Length: 356
Ligand code: GTP
Image 1 (cartoon, protein in one colour):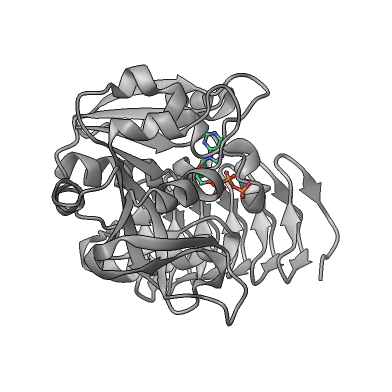
Image 2: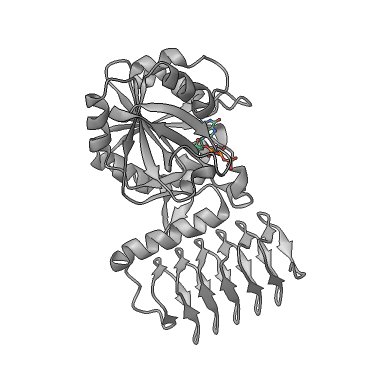
């Protein structure tokens, strides 16, 4: 079984953290999202993965080398300067995917506890070219929403319907099983949106069915969603997260600390502090509801609450960084700086004044 993972988007909504890292490599509780995805695909009987990338995302993925979980991994590159959207890369990878059997396609920016074996079974039983994993959410208005009739055929697919006009609470979970016949629906050599062009055509042809999933499902497309996804995962897997014993700080669970973290006296970590590899934290620091990527350095008396601190970033003494603030990779926040309300610092930039 083969799977194609869409990993060539620009992740504009996650800037500036995504300036130096594709969404699929964003850490979720200290492991790249791609690794969580690989694990689930391998469990679901997939043996080969095709990563649909652009030159930059390919570069970062090759460099970071997430554990492949026994999968054979190939790359399919969008043409330079011509991103192919969410369906164009499927057509581009037609030869790699082959025509012998159905294959899985999924977005590289969702965490989904999908039982892929069940999804494939559902596809084999249905008489359609495509099966879409569906997830039920409270407010579907920011997603692709479906209307289902009996036998689970999708009768309508509406991308981001206005509030009050949503036909159901079932949304596109960003994972599909497709028959090779779908290749004929996708024009070649240009950007094509699977949501806006291909699904509506499959609906008209009565070739799209839905399969409801009930495990954890999270989109990490926006900063608030990214923080929330980490929070949920940390709560779900808290029992498996091992904290190094030599850390003297006060720990308010749940907290995840990677290897090599050093913490000074009187610091308080948690609740919901996720600290990456080799992070150095000074004395009297408080970190809650925040994510700190590997190799960052946090000075004495710093307060972080609701923030994301990028890889190798530096936060000077007495800095106070609040809700929704993002400090990108290698950025530097100088001593005593206060930041609030989603303020951001670009990669490798230095900031020495308050941003309130
Ligand atoms: P924003 O710019 O923040 O909207 O993000 P995005 O365009 O990167 O992601 P979006 O949610 O629109 O796309 C869903 C998935 O498809 C993500 O995993 C993207 O990486 C991927 N994707 C989006 N556009 C392309 C593309 O042009 N080529 C390829 N290969 N993948 C894409």
